[in-house]
Image (cartoon, rainbow, N blue to C red; front, side, top):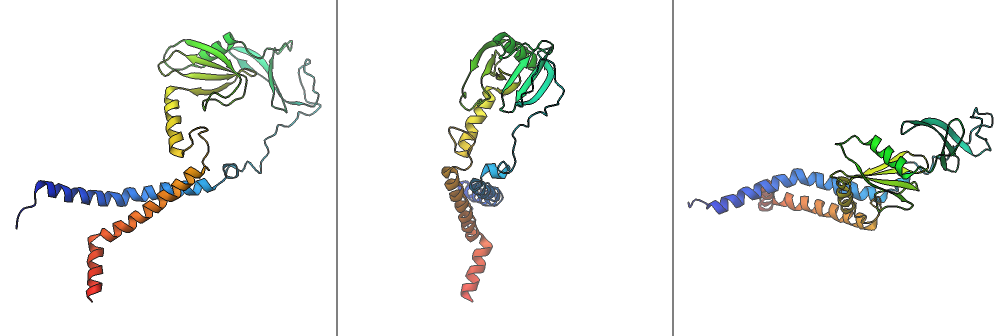
Length: 243
């Protein structure tokens, strides 16, 4: 009997490796596709129980102890004294979601914060390799998929290698999203993964649902074809026909 050529042996070996790897990898592919299709059927708000839980701010009681300069007209939700860039400030939050900063003693309004204050807050928050602030601009609308509010907000750009941006609420001075080139790459890949090229948060698109169902069918049919190629199954089938 002639010895099989190297090319033929490599072909047979590759076919065996491919066949057995398909069994293990294919199971996970089936799970990815099947669960992805199932998740596309679900309403994300219902999954998070947002439809049955109210997150509206409660008004402070009329007799709540407050600084003398604060008038409780029934619209207050919270009055908090905290630190901001090393200074004490009093944050007044109303039930409509609006926020303002004040001097704790005099009540003088301190918000919206200035560009120099935003730069200072950003530098104080930075924990990476030493860097400087490249720029700061006030934004009043969503910045692509990077930042969607609250507005107005300061977009502070660091001079680091990753072009990191920090968003700071101009009304409260609180830190918002931090975005770098790494995040932007991940965001692009995530959009491709869930087939949402604009918003990056829609898992209920018809595109994703159709491809999820199609992928599940492909994976299942692949297992059927693989089972028919298994040597033992073929031999048993032949024997049963001969009998």
